[in-house]
Image (tube, rainbow, N blue to C red; front, side):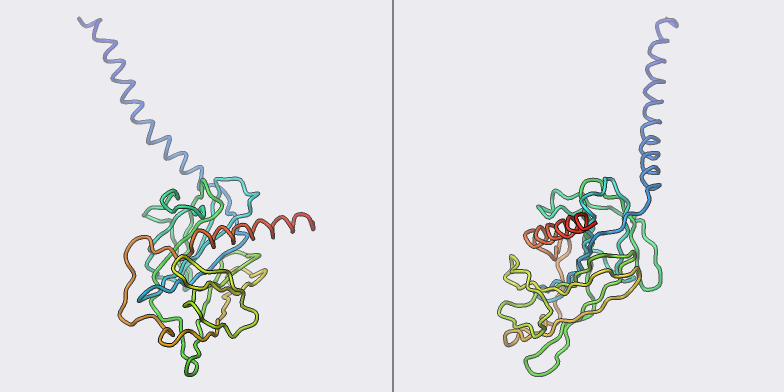
Length: 254
């Protein structure tokens, strides 16, 4: 009987060893990923999204299409920001995009919370947070200004400051580009900045005349929890395509 029990003991030992090694192998894989060098973004979109009662901000970082995945990246938001959604970003259905989960690898430097993540499948990541302050200022009767500001943590070839305005809004600034209409009927506008140095705060504003009574969002409103995604898939795909065109042009010029 003792001789017959040895195979069972051997199998049990093997199972215990396998169960022990499996989490260790995952741990070593994770450690290996975080030894990757940081890869800077080719472009970043900072997007203030107007909702029915509040604002949120989505920051989207785009890697060059040439970057080999997985890649380690860093993205910053104002210190203390309440994160709504943080994920790899494909520009398609958000349900297909892998979310980053807590506890996040985050550090605070000055007035920035800097998140470090590994993007495995997509060349873009997006982090969205609640905007506590009203970015809109009334300049005069019927005329408003929406203020935007972003600080990248690495040298960034392209930075876009973007927002959505009510339909039929008239933009006063000639150097503001119109990007199209989103699914909610808002008009999307942007300012573009080139070759922004690391930790340089970029400020921009969009002066506009909204329809009567739509200068600011309703007071006392709040965002719904969960996926308050700021940029529609269609607009994001257009912007991602623009990144590729710019990147391709740079390669040809070189």
